Image 1 (spheres, rainbow, N blue to C red):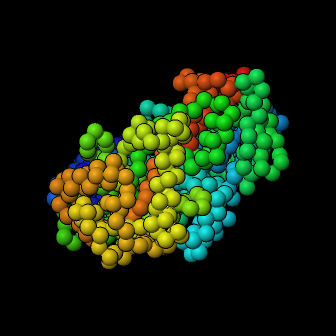
Image 2 (cartoon, rainbow, N blue to C red):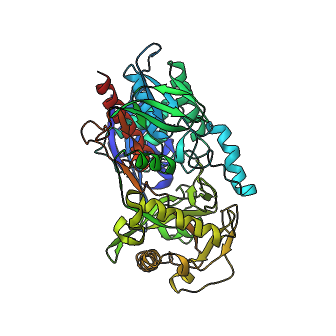
Image 3 (cartoon, rainbow, N blue to C red):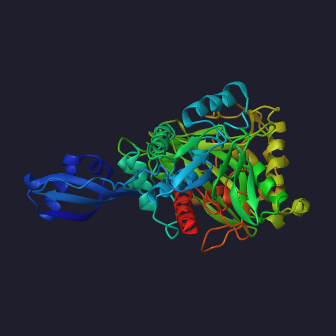
Length: 518
């Protein structure tokens, strides 16, 4: 017999299978000797009260041995000799689009401007060690996209967009821990995700797809408002309809589209800083315990959101037990992001703390039309680079000092490996952003006692929360509104926000492309 139960238990009990069996036997009136196995289906932490509980949904195998797999496999057949389609970009949108094309019997040609996920790691190391940014291989460009080396969080609110469980199962099929199917906030980790990405690439190749690294799309081939293929920097031309999944930092793509009258529009983004606390402090605050999280709880997370003067101020991409990393994708830029290894074991936590902005909020950039907020991003990133000494050193300020508009010369120890330099962020950040951040921090400090502290440091700047441009597509067919055979996809096209939602959008674009080929 197989029974499923909902349990609410203490963390130490949830962490011990034998104790969990004994608890189920006692609470449900089952002979403990008849329980052959317990499988956790869902797990979340309830830290709203002083006593912390873990909510579990479990499957209990009574006088039975588990026969079912922990995840659902997708069958990928050979596509040699089939019709082909081009996927530009090997981030989550592009990878899941390519795998879905294989499912649908279409041969994907994946073109990625950056290096493969392993080689890419060497260029990322140079950013911290020598302050050298390779404009084609960095935290944004390369196999795996921006998520590969910036955390690998899989939490999404995009439940209505598509099958989130399918995306998670495909990750498991390619080597991710099945814990991502269980946890309320699933996470692979930057140390584990590269291997999973390699396995996804190998599936594409084994099925007859093609993958080209260090191959940048320089132009779309358009004839009579229909895509015929792409031209690349290597001189190669690839023919077929195109899924355009180039990510939120491919600014050259946006400029090409605008120059060649492919319809795009400016969209709102969120801009701010990375806020870094000692992880032990966040554990004490979130778990209501002066001793922190203890032995049975994970590194604590937080989420804050409020409205300040008509704009949202909120935490973004929270990385418990993580690091702040340099995420510039070109010269004369300082951009920061966050990541966590799978064990979330560092001494720090960080999150983006950002302010919602709309194109009309900065009328001085209106002259750039659809690229207005792209130019705003570039100017702010260059200002940050100047403040940091014209290298990848990041300007920073203690949290309370920022709210009091005070510059302190000393800074706390930080995970940001290129180094910090004390800087008056309250002074040189646009007041539209700094004033709202300051008021937001004061509100968050009232919501969570101890959060507003000079033990925390603001690190500038966080500008790459999403694309500043939307490539306009039809809501039903997902094709571009005027160019047939072009399927704008994922974060870079303005239709996703994170790994899972980008993967979902990639699958949807592949399905629409298959209909187009019919």
